[in-house]
Image (cartoon, rainbow, N blue to C red):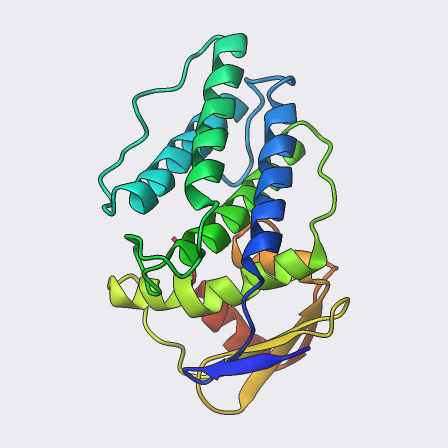
Length: 245
C-alpha cells in the first residue's frame, strides 16, 4: 500500500472522492436505520447524549459542512434543534443527509471553507465520511448491534487523526507535539502510521477498526484487541494528547 511522509509521520494516500462519497452514503443510511430504535438509548463515549441527541448532532453538522461548501464559510449552524417526534426526526435527518450529499457531489479540488487544510471540498468528503463512520458505530453500539467498520475506511480515519485532528489540537493550544514517536500498525490491512518525530519508541498493533476506535476514545487502552510493543508509558503519553477534540 502506498504512503507519504507528512511532518515525520507516514500516512496512507487519501481515498478517492467517489469511494468516500460511497462510504458517506452507506454510513448515513445505516445511521438513519438506527433511528427506528430506542431514541432514548444512552450513547457511550458521548457524555449524557441519547441516540436522539446524537442524531441532532450528526444532522446539524451535515448542514454545517454543506454550508461550508456551498457558501464558503463556517457559520452555517445546524438550522435549529432537531424535531423530538420520531417521524419528523427521521424526515429531518434524511433531509440533512440529502443536502450534504448534494453539496459534496462535486470536484474534490474545488475551494471550500474548512477548519484545517486543505481548503477543498475533498476535505469535507473525507471528514464527513469518517465522522459518520464513528457515529454510526456509536448509534449501533447504543442499540447493542454494532457492525464491523470497513478496514480501509477505518485506516483513513487513523490517518486523519494524525494529519488533521492532532495538529489542530496543537494549533489550538489544547495539546503539545509528542516528545517521542508512536507507531500504529493495522494487522488486517498492513497499513502503518508514525505520529511524532524520530524513531518510534513503541508500537501498537491491531485491526484498523480497533486503532480508530482507540484514537477516538471508544475503546480503552487496556483492550485485549491491542498488542503493545516497546515503551508502553511513552505510547500512553502520546495517546493522552489529547489527539482529538
